[in-house]
Amino acid sequence: MKRILSLLLALALVLTMAACGTKKAETAEINVYVLAGPTGVGAMNLWAKSDAGKTANTYHFTMPAANDEVVAAIAKGEADIAAVATNMAATLYQKTGGGVTVLAVNTLGVLSLLSNGEEIASVADLRGKTIYTPGQGANPEYILRYVLTENGLRPDSDVTIRFVGDGSELVSVWQSEPTAVIMAPQPMATTILMKYAGSRQVMDMTEEWNKVSGGESALMMGCVIVRNAFLAEHKGAVDTFLREYAGSIEAAQNDVTGTAALCEQYGLIPKAALAEKAIPRCGLTYVSGSEMKAQLSGYLQVMYNANPKSVGGKLPDEDFYYGA
Image: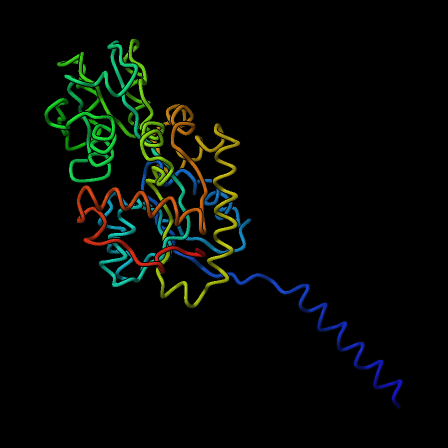
C-alpha cells in the first residue's frame, strides 16, 4: 500500500510539473491606438502579424487623426494601449488621476535642423539666424529653447524663432526665405530634403540634447501607455504585448524596406519611398523599466522647467513608470 501511495504521489507531482511547464501566457483582445508619424512606426510589424493571426494577443488597431482623439479614447475606455508623445502621457496621467502607466519608450528624438546651403557647423552658428518650426507650446519649442539656452544663446534675442501651425507649411519656407533654418520632425524633414537638391541636415537635435544634458536625461519623445483599469485585469496580456511589441520594433530596425511598405499600406506615412528614407532617422527604440524611468523622468523635468503645463501641471509619481 505504501509503495502504491508513493507511486500515486510521484505521478501527481509529474502531472503538476507538466501542467506548469505547458501553461500558456495570458492573452487578451487589446484595442491599440497609434498616431500617424514616428511614434506609430514601431507598431507596423505587430499590426501586420495581428492581421495575419500570428500574434498571441488579438489586437484591434486604430489610427486617429489627432492627439485629442487618443485622450478621449483613453478616458472613455475605448483604447487600452496607445502610442503617444511622452509629455502627453504625463499630461494624461494627471488628467485621469493617475489612470495610465507608461510601459516603454518607443521613440527618441525625431527633430532635425535643416539648411538650404547655409554653413552651420554648431549651435553657436545659429546666432542671428531665423528658425522655422512647428510645435509652439509643445515639445519642439521646449526642446529647441533648451538646446539654445544650454549652448549660451538667448532664444528670441540671439535667434529668431518663427512658428508655423502645421509641419507641412515648412515645405515652402525656403521659397520666400532661402537662408532660414528649418527644424522639422520626421517624416517631414525627409520630405523637405527630397524636394530641395542643395539642402542638408546640419544637426540632429537628439545628439545636441545629449551633448548638453550631461547624461541626466535623454530626448525621449514617444512612448506606449496602458489604461490602468485594463492593466489591473490583464497584466499577463500586457506583458505579452510588450514582448510582441519589442519584436515589432526590432523588425522595423532590421527590415526598413518591409516596414516602409507597411507604413504606406496602413496609412501611417503616405509613400513607402518616403518612409524608407525617414525610418532610419525616426529614433526607433525600446527602453523599459528602471532605465526608462531614469532617462524619461529627466526629460519630463526639463519640460516641466520650461512650462509645467507641458506635462499636466506637475511631474508624474513613481507609479507612472511600469516595471521600474
